[in-house]
Length: 234
Length: 234
DNA sequence: CGATGCGTTGATAACTTTCAAATTTAGTGG
DNA sequence: CCACTAAATTTGAAAGTTATCAACGCATCG
Image (cartoon, rainbow over all chains, first blue to last red; front, top):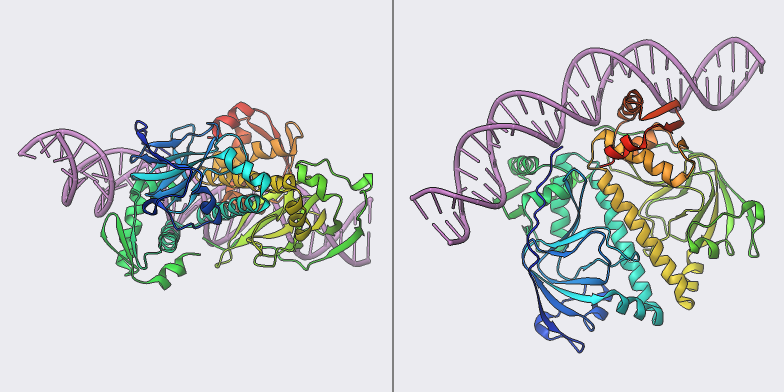
């Protein structure tokens, strides 16, 4: 197995606003998690350019991140250079919340992204006083765990099954009907599914040939036959 | 890919004792998690024969389980019959704790096992009154998440790397030095690593040929050269 | 307009699975 | 305790899937 390109760009971050009060409408995010609600009251919004690092593996986990816009990927680099993507996060998702004091994965912006950054100590402090916040944190960790378990299941399937599952997952999470705009590159998808870009490309072409999907361009996929895809989504 | 044997035996469980007071010494477990401490005060011990179900996927998650002796596996059956093992749990490990109301995986005893069964409502009730319990639950979910992330990374590696990683993980978790007693079958290992039993067998033989391990019998592996194994544990 | 990055397509090689059979181990009844 | 049967594991040969290597196309950007 060969090294997948681990894009490492300079960290170009820009702090935009610091807000302790109510967020303005423009930046408010429909909270996917109840936790996100609380977070909006106590963070600062940061902008991350495409491919810049948000946090690094083994760095102290000082902050928790709520995606306002754009997409974020978490990943690990194996010791021979291969990259494994752990998860993608979109608007309303929370990244980096955990109990341990250091991050177990790195995180980068997939495309230009705005992220609400909240001190972890603020969250845990709140949780100590308000058990419902603690409950929300546990719930989030539970959901992340379930997602990771799903990812594990995904990785034992065939290439076609993985790609089909990935497309259905994206359609479900992005909620844009049958048209999926993919913010990530083929390399990102490959590193998420544990395949190569060539296999991703060939598999998409294959699914197109079966009339299960359309691929009008590299970053857009249209689901044509969800039943066929679900049949593959073992 | 073909169906892996999903052993499904009759559920032979036997409730042994019900204890609300202090547990007797014989059954007390050195708690791997602080949570286990609290659990020992409020559960009932159940015995599960080899290959019997402890809980099933999509069943209401009414209980949480602390392994007292033996080993437990969690797994999912894919719609074509393949089985994917999510995790193994040993003495002192907690199984089935989550926020959602139904289990996302099934659980079975790998060998004859004793398990302390605790009502989930008892735990969450306790957590609502005592934020440190809530914190412990979050910590446990976090650890499980990290384990699952490690599992995801494992599954993108080559067969040899997966087996090497598995052996190192077992050696670390069982803590019996260089001699590993495997409570699980080759099929279990295969379903955990996303490989076939034949590949597991061949890979072990290969590692033996490289003098990295000894396999005196099917259920015992001796680590001979951890450095070589770690080199493979990408 | 040429460079550059990203994606697609093709041919070949490597790795793992599948199918088959032999061998060892475990379980059961006498 | 031994003999016998079933189950689990190992080993071999062939087939299948995905990776690797290489070339080409397409778009973006200076």
